[in-house]
Length: 234
Image (cartoon, rainbow, N blue to C red; front, side):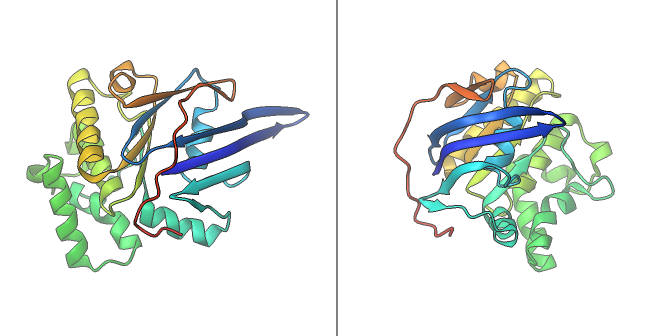
């Protein structure tokens, strides 16, 4: 699904140049849950931002389903809205909105009608086991419940890729286990690909594969032939 070739990222900090990524290449398959691991400063967040098409200031090339990504801002915004979901450690739910409204929010950005987006959002909340709290605001939900709302929000537009940054770091063991199982279920049922930056062994040990980043380089990553999906994403 995702092929990246010779990705290189340099930060200029005054007189110093920091090489965050050093010409790394690899492929991530459709439906994989990949753990992105490594110490702080290893380049995990940089790689997440680039693969999520949030950062275009890099050298190298990224392809989705055989289609090379341009760096045009408008085209990338449209592509992200249609094909990529994001899950954050701090959930990033809108506090004045209910769980239902938070999940439906991405469809509002895509100009889906109110009735349709609420119907789809309700279906997703049921799917993640939160139908009974759909009218609760985030401050009335537990950490695990808030993270499941965030996952439902990330998946409501049926993205091919979900980028997750430390999704279990602030959760207890029971909630973390529920989040991991939910991701595995969705990857197997829908072919959703998850790239998860994590320090949490509860998460990484149950992923399909681990990418180790050390000082901006890949210490190990089996290479695969990219899979070309039937859905047109160019």
